[in-house]
Length: 365
Image (cartoon, rainbow, N blue to C red; front, side):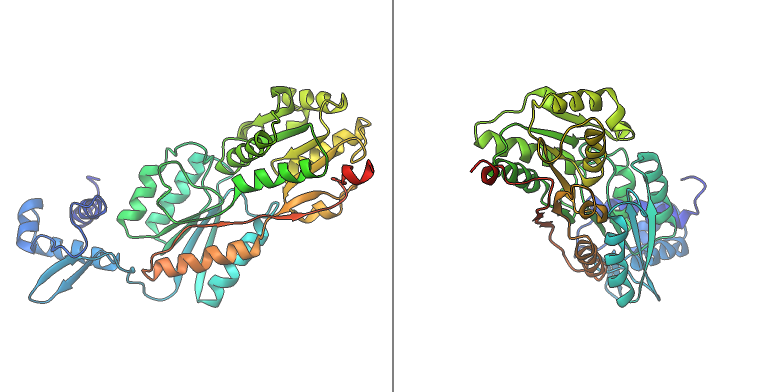
């Protein structure tokens, strides 16, 4: 901070105070003379600082009246730049989501700056700080391990201080629920997966969930709640909960082998997986070990990944809208950049029935 020019120090202090509500919308900021005395700087330094706040859409200068706090759109010149941070870019369903974003942004003359943080909070922090330096006009962000509070909250609060809107996608951090977000109804998805299995005659479901992100934690809660309404509890040996660090080679880990043993012993008749990737991995290993899927074990995934329809057997899954999801996020961030207020959206899952979950009720007739 000491190395910054004085006008930047003044601007940062005033941004923070506006964000904290010390100066509220419609309220006059201190006069130039009052600010000059407060910060012990020249009048020119104060004017430079106020110009930055104007560019950020935080104040209006009215000739002969003063400077007023106003949260409006940032004053942009030229092309709108939208930063996007996701877990991955080229893998799984992410290309379709980002394609939906890019299509809408391009149509509106905006440029997308796409970054992957690979579920690493340090990488996330570096990307956020770089976007503040550029800066971007708005940010679409998939948080990292969103089941717990983020150590990067201080950086995200600087986006608010700069009046740069932030839209969360897929998940959002505890304590930041007030920020607009576009997510899937993961709790409802967990219930839908469990209900589908039970309605088809499966009575001993097992579950596989990643629980250090909000998506997996809510799918697990929905899964359990739906079973509980039917008077069914899932013993610990039929439930595999894992973290980001454990995701690689999960099927060959001690936890994975323990669940495979349970499935081989036919102590469960259905496996509901966090997403299609893990469903495909466990399907391959189960078939290698002689478990007949779907004759002996039903299988459900999440996301309707491209490969899920060509697996043998093809995978019953809950469909993610992907491109529509990305398009909605892009439209929202553009409106937020224009100064509009946006509400959060929770999108529904679509059940896609395929070979991996036959109806046992019909088989038993």
